[in-house]
Image (cartoon, rainbow, N blue to C red):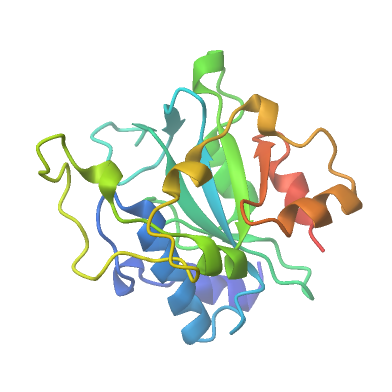
Length: 221
């Protein structure tokens, strides 16, 4: 492990804005901060926002701070993390997950092993899919007015962040559902370089299965 990676792993997650159950907004601000403090490229070109979900909106992830179990497993409706991949570097991609008990950040391979646990046999309803969105596109298009966190009577299911909701550059107020909607039918059938390049340039990025996740980051332009 390089000295740079060792230094990053020692970072304190509490230095970053975090509101429980608002992972998409937490990651939005996390990426902004990484760019501002020089850990990531100022243009965010080395950052990717990864939404994890499925059709049933029930995805098991291990080593989560919100868990009361010894193994740290939580059944989320969706989760969001940041993956950093330096273009001109041999270093492994890094995962920034503010809700994880693993080192912050963690190498992608160890994160997949510990958090995704691909060797664990799951029923089809619990298979995880991953929507990878390039951070510059995420900053431009993503919006959330937090309507998904309100009860029918207008009360909050969890206290919202203290800052104003995120609005897309074109004025859209809410499109979170587009990002967390995914199924096996949405996954790439091929990870050839041209297909990946075209897909990752789209607003909603690309959807892959857990078996394709690590390979995808080796194919990114």
